[in-house]
Image (cartoon, rainbow, N blue to C red):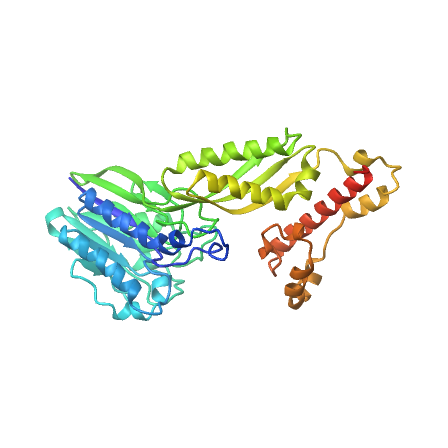
Length: 419
């Protein structure tokens, strides 16, 4: 019986995007997150006494300014070497972008597969054959699997590959291939990389994306892990995720449809954030809070979004080890504007015009040089601590359109009610 650890997409020293610009962000945890997660990975390999570790590409995050990132990796590999643990790795698209990587001298327990042709490494004592090929350039559009050798008889065969497979949302279509291509090699386990979400593509044979070991932005939420595999008598008997991340991203949706007071909204948010913290254990949390639902509190929330955001930040600070990455108010009116004011209201026509307001995205994009000036002139309610959506991104501009419309309606409703 032996065990091995499968990991990928470590992106060592990659910055966690969208955090450090905020004054109250956990800067030290952010800067050290990928290194600490990597240390956890090495600790896990040693604790589980694995026979070897597989790294399926994107160990690094592009080119480095100096050797410190590489030296940190070598230190981790030296720890594994002392325990008799070998490491097999292939380069991915981000690794291929690094010039320093190519001249880095690795410890003798680390085997890096060539980039011009697939090759095989044998572990005689375990009757294991590891097959792999790395990226020679950042963009690889060819099917690398076709270059991999057939399985070796009487060996436990592993394929190590950085690939998008037949395509995965949010990932470039590098080294594309099909499940049939993989199974045609006759291997027992395919250790894939490139996709940042854990996925068991197939179990016979096992085809696995382990995901990345540390989420780097709000689109990489939830637990991040490595895959621990146990083999007995040449057969896989256990495959499981082992969490190694240190800062976890989470999206928290709080439905306030039944709320009639701001205090009730605050209470629901406090309970929801506390639940998320309990699930994350001792990790630092970066949370995006979405206030959703349709109800009578909608207009009040739109008007008071800024002070409420600060209240929510205070709640997360009080809970400890939690940081509020962003608050988004995405509630809706419970009833049409007309029924709220009445069709004969003096401002009914104006309300109707605002309700159908659509900012022209193309026109706004043509005004992009004026965006910086616009930011300084907009009321604070429009920014809501999130001026990133005042950019050239059409989706973010659509969100701005919605926010402007809803804030105007909220102010008109307040005026129409005489308050």
